[in-house]
Structure formats: C-alpha cells, structure tokens
Amino acid sequence: MEERKVVSIEERIPKLKQSRRKKANRRLIFYLTILFLLIGTVIYLQSSLSHVRHIVISGDQHVSATEIQELSGVTTDSNYWQVNPSEIKDQVVAHTEISSAKVSRQFPSTVKIQVNEAERIGYVMENGQFRPILEDGTQLDATSSLPAGDAPILVGFTKATYLKEMSKELKQLPDSVSSLISEVHWMPEEGNPYQIQLYMNDGYQVQASIRNFSNKMPAYPSIVSQLEPGAEGIIHIDVGAYFEEFKEPEVEEENSDEVQG
Image (cartoon, rainbow, N blue to C red; front, side, top):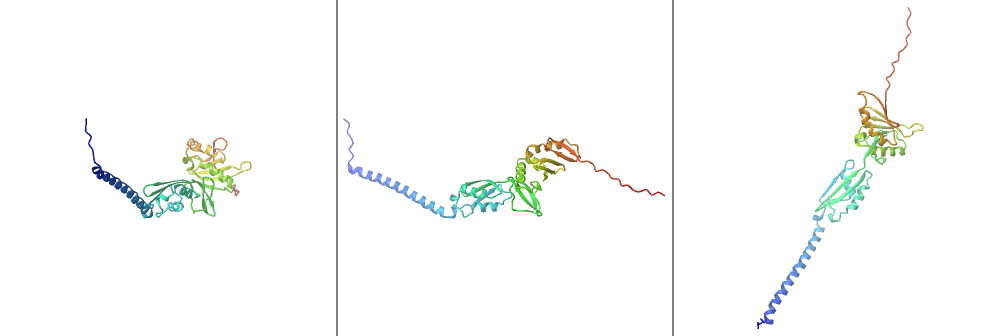
C-alpha cells in the first residue's frame, strides 16, 4: 500500500504567507498603476499638452482662413478633447458664403476644417462698385471696384425675382460654358419679361430666355463651331437656334448741289 506524504501545518504556513504576500503585492501594484494613470490624465488635461496645436483649414477662397478660424472658435488654447466637431460645423456654415463644412480631429493635437463656399454666380454694379451674387441669388454686402473675373456681370436686373431665377440657371451651367459669358443683360419686352441678351468673351452675342436657359445654353459651343470665321451677329437660342448676322451699315451718300457755270 502506497504511503501518503504528510505535510505538516508548520511547513505549509510559510508557503501560504508567501502566496498571500504575492497577491497583495500584485493588487497594490495594480491600484498604484490606476492611481498614477488617473493623476497623469488629470495633469495632461490641465496642461498645455492637451491643447490644440495645429488648425488646418482647406477649401477657403473668398472667405479667409483667419475668418473661418474665428467662426470656429478653435484656438491653440482650446482643449483637444473638448473640441466638438458638430458644434464647430454649425458655427462655420452660419457664414453666408459657406454652404457646407466638415470638421474632424486628428490625434494628438490637430483640428481640420474643410469648407465648401457658395459659388459666386455673377456681379451686379451699384454706384460704380461691383457686388457679388451667390448661387441662390443672395447679394453680398462686400463690394469691389472691379469684378473678380470668375463670373459674368449681371446688368439691368432691377427685380429680385428675375435675378434669383437667373442665378439658379447660371448655377446649373457647365463651367466650360459659363466661363465664356462676359455679361448678361436683362432686356424684358412686353409679353416676354424673361428675355436676356448675353455678351460673350469670343465676341458673339446671344439672345435667350431666363427660363430653360441652362438647358439650351450648353449648345452654344457647338453652334459657334459651325459659323464661318469672322462672322458677327446674334445667336438666338430661345425658340429654336439660329444665327442672325449683323447687317452691314448702309453708306449714305450726301447730295450736293452741282454748281452750274
């Protein structure tokens, strides 16, 4: 019969004490680690280490990066973890010229703000100054002595209704076509308050209607390509599409009395 090894209590007590001491030490180390992490977190959050260090702004064209940052309220004194992208977005898009914005945080200390500005669809002249018109027909307060050249000049639009409708039509034009337009004149006639006349950068004139303008005007480059070089006249795209060449000025001969001698 196999003999069992009997371990006395006196032999087991040191081992139990040693095991309990190891567990207690591990527990103490765990709690100390948590404590130091909490203290470190508090120190980090209260120090400049948690501040925003870089503010990256993109998409700005007419609205300056400085103004966008001021709208956002974010500075290098802002706490990175307290930056609220949704709140900043709402503050930025409150600007008349900014149609949308995207705000994000990039660890460890960067805030990115990307904006999309409302397109400037044209300029109207007022008291010798040019006032930008946005894609929804809104007139900006800011004026300049010269238009920026990125949109046509809108002339004679004395009624806001037609100006807004014209702005929406211009917005829908391809850039390749809108860039060819120098001026748009509102020239209403009895029975046709939507008539407009365009002066193009290539020297041609176009007579059209505000209504369905964005659907018909894209055909302009194709029409011009079919004209003879040097031809001058008006391209009509309101009802159908045809070219009306300018008439040559008639030479007026002055009648003179013949001196009979």
